[in-house]
Image (cartoon, rainbow, N blue to C red):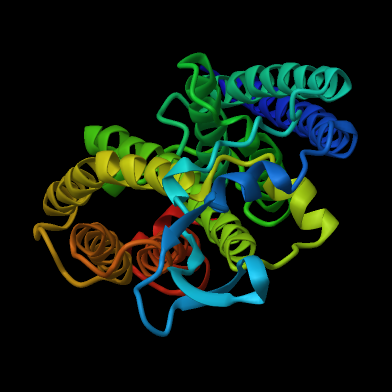
Length: 365
């Protein structure tokens, strides 16, 4: 392909990215309208599941008995003892908390905005996908040899994963608003800070392992993102349910937003299952990187900053999975480890490339 045609295709890819960003913005506004105008679920919906019915039980004889005065004919009185009846509340059942109905909350108007938001997200994704494909044709290689290409491919994969979950009938409508907001931030960073002109690969990157290693890293990162959003929302929803269980009264805004989410138990399970499924693939991703390093530099491991942070990310997620399997380390404490794992992933793929000199710096910004 001649240089002029490559430049034209690269420009077309850029225009498609800008167009996708514009449509993502409209989808973001539609999601906001969905949450604002959808029906507002009531706090009693979750509170009813957390408040067990009181049960009456007879108390022990003695201090827990009460005297009853019985007056007979002729003015005689007798005092009889009978067991007191006390009220005992069963422990709240967190596993009985129902999932929220999603951002639309079953409201017709909210559903309309939700359908508009989803349609716009699909349209933006198709533009986004077209931009990545055109960039691939323009550079005649895999479209993730620098940070700009990595960012655009990563955010596209995140949206693709979200849409696949929806096609699989998973209850992930609640993910739409934070996902679109994050994609806009990622693409904004890509075009404003990370943009790199289309160029050919340096010899060290010209390998089939570029396709295998980086594609796996992008796919794992996309699913890790879905998991970490679920984990963060779990922390908010868990605090909300704890406040209700202890008799507190959350604010109207918290009620409006958090009642629409799945229960804390559902969010926790969703995040855990994704992470457990991704972890073996992430392990192979590191192994693939080591094989690529041996082909490029003649050694499998050299404690380069990128390699170190890839390993730290692996350790963080291994600790999270171990914590989930260990009694006493479930719930919030394990969630913090899951969040730490994704922060390590971001440091590895953004912080190291942008702020640290390493053998991987030749991929540029």
